Image (cartoon, rainbow, N blue to C red; front, side, top):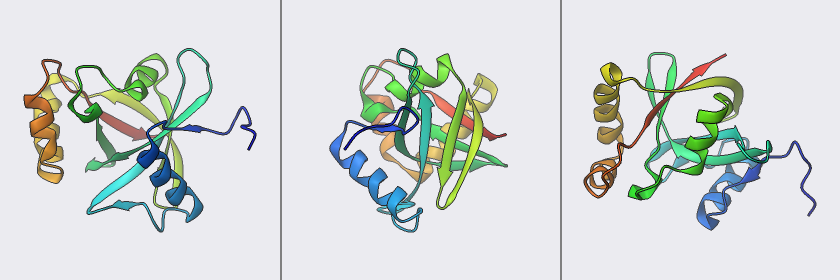
Length: 145
């Protein structure tokens, strides 16, 4: 199937792309809850190609903002979506059936630890990811526009 320039390219990780496909095809009715965790779809603009890139992420809330973690499964490198939003923080978010524009920002030190605890309570595996890497895993706030 041909890819249109404005159609997001989904994660190359097979199980993530399957999750996204189900999420999109059901308008979030299936896929919003991924196993037992709430998930959203984040679309960033590729920093090299300028094309939209989409991934699925577990999310939490902080007031009106959505919170996601750039864990990359505990790898020593930031996930590609994080590099993309650093280059262009204007993103698109889908939560269940609702899609909206947002501005992404990395949580500053004064917010980070509180948000990290919130996200690690939601998904405890984040703590083992943090223990397994020397990098500081970014916590990102998505502010609705």
